[in-house]
Amino acid sequence: MNTVERRHASSRPLAASGAQQAVADLLAKANVAINGGRAWDLQVADPSVLDCVISNGNLGLGEAYMDGLWDVEHLDQFFHRVLSAHLDQQVKPLGLAFHAMRARMLNLQNLKRAWTVGEAHYDLGNEFYAAMLDPRMTYTCGYWRDAGSLAEAQEAKLDLICRKLRLEPGMRVLDIGCGWGSFMGYAAEHYGVECVGVTISREQAEWAKARYAGLPLEFRLQDYRDIDERFDRIASVGMFEHVGRKNHRKYMEVAHRCLADDGLFLLHTIGKNQRGSTPDPWIDKYIFPNGDLPSIGQIGDAADGLFVVEDLHNFGADYDKTLMAWHANFEAAWPRFASQLGERFRRMWKYYLLSCAGAFRARDIQLWQWVLSKEGVADGYTRPE
Image 1 (cartoon, rainbow, N blue to C red):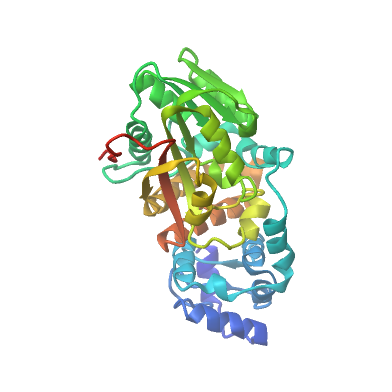
Image 2 (cartoon, rainbow, N blue to C red; image 1 turned 90 degrees about the horizontal axis):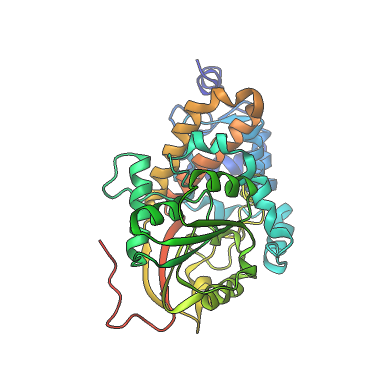
């Protein structure tokens, strides 16, 4: 009998405070019950845990889950229901007012602070990520239209980017935020291009140099703001989420100065539906320090006067499948890392992957690929099938 089953088997009506009753009433709007019998119902041993939701929102909810104070059989289903009902917008904890003000007023992704996420997240260890990701170590959304596996979905996404950029042999390509080099390696192998990639993760750079030795690829440990060279094409896949609203314009100016006049720039990024929203406090504290999802309007503002938007493609629903595949790999590999990372980390990582899967399933967040040019493609741009 697992934790959820034990708690459900011994569950009984809980005496609730006013705050706890408010949480129960709120969850009922999403057809979620406390200590109910369905896969998405919350299993709570101590009702005081629900006070954390009122006082600290998702930060309190996530920390209580990490500490094992509540559980649910399928976290992804729980978050799908909660976010589809927009319950997150109905909980505005006063304790997080400073977090919201800080995100709006300060440049949390300045040159000094930009390296924090590399050290905290991407440098967890290449062995850990290799166990969770596809063979190319592609840590971004796959393209599942005709794919039957994670590896197929990731290669389909990489090929789609290459075709959208209209890559040709001999072109010089910049990858802003190159990760473990999956796009660069694929583009060099299949389209005959040369690539320069920048990353803020030492672990990623060293792994990529070894993995793709012999190909015309250069991996640099460098901030994007320091790039000042010309390239035929630019790709940025899953990095813009770390740029921050105070730096969106600077990022676009860097891309503009580095792109050839007749070049194309592909921006692949997670995005939010609302311009003025605040970064999730739990994700900010435990997963992606200083992350800040952009809205379509914010990206448009940043590109204003610099680029022509040739194409905008949303396949955010595919991130649900990608995250569920990562979670399955993570759970299968966990015995190898349990003694090193511990149970609290396991619950933290599970909460991260499955809450995000639920968010994409609810269409609360999106995945966009933008294709941009400096002056507009002559006779227009057609998205490849």
